[in-house]
Image (tube, rainbow, N blue to C red; front, side, top):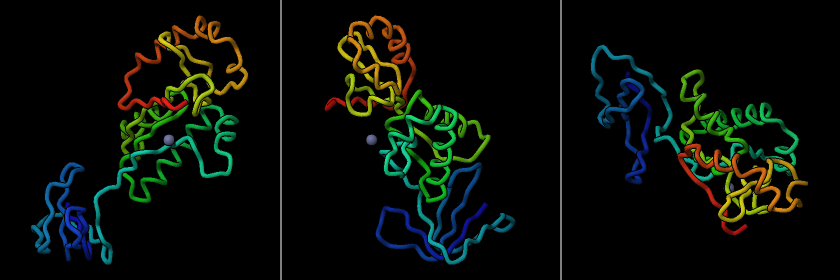
Length: 198
Ligand SMILES: [Zn+2]
């Protein structure tokens, strides 16, 4: 397939190429020409008075956070099913805005990885997602409510979204949560996020 438009910006030079032809095969760009020439017999998608550019990459995203005045309260009131639906909506909106890759640096219960796998399955078009899962922080630290709190070498954690748990003795939490925490760390993550500043 060929895609044509008025111009193309490739990010390598500040110039906009006029009258470009982008060749796509098996879902991938295999060639870009600026001379407007077209191979005969190929399907052509003419986007008219548009400027083509590569997909944008958002390197610091939280699909779980909405744009309301209190995104934390929203997350805490949502169950996982609702939160996942909101994240799906946010990812689809990002794609519609030209963001084809999202690096999510903090979710709850690895929902961004669930969403990544959903889009990967081809069931629905979505952006490529690279995700850390819940960020690792100290008990009561930055974004503790996402469920990634851990203290010391035991790497314990507090239950997700439970503010009361933060006030419990760390030793008790450690005993109860240690095995779950280890299991969590064993889960492969394409990206890791540790909030060392607390
Ligand atoms: Zn962040």
